Length: 130
Image (spheres, helix red, strand yellow):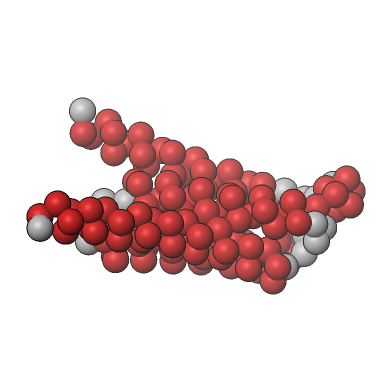
């Protein structure tokens, strides 16, 4: 049913972002610090985590209108990522501008892909109506 689909979507989004919160606030181990600190893999993981969360949010949010929905998809993960980075020093982790940029890059990449996909689909509709 439609209601169970909405519930499933909400559970997916909340679960994804809950995992990001938990992983962001776990105290780092020595191995994590050595392996991930300033590495390209760490930044890629940030981009994928926040980009994936943004995509799920776009899929799950029932906000009417493309631009409003896209706005929610961009703003929510960016605020969450910024707040988590600022809180991380309280649990012994570093507040990293690089991580914030990687989070933003993932979100912007997904927003760009969704916008480009919409533009292409609108062009196909226009071409078919000619």
